[in-house]
Length: 82
Image (cartoon, rainbow, N blue to C red; front, side, top):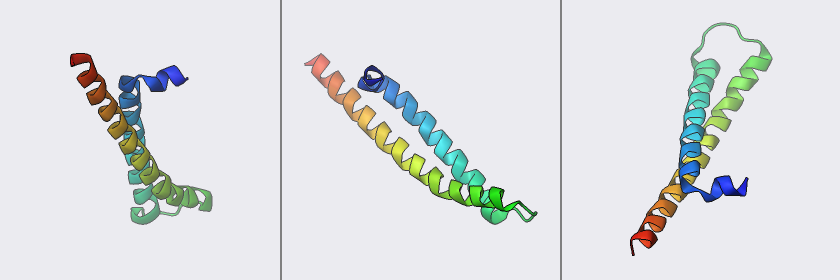
C-alpha cells in the first residue's frame, strides 16, 4: 500500500478521482437537499445534507493530494535532470 502512495503518478490519478467524486457528491447533495421540490424520505434527505458536507471535504483532500503529487513530480524531475 505504501508503494502505491510513494509513486506521485498514482497519487495524481487518485486525486483526480477523489476530486471528481467530491464534486459529484456536492452537486447531488445540493440538488437533493435544496433544489428538489418533491417529497423525499427522511433518510434520503439526511443523506443529501450529509453529501453537502462530505463532498467539499473530498474536494479539499483531493486538492491537497494533487498539490503534493505535483510538487513531488516537480522535485523528482528536477533531481533527475540535475
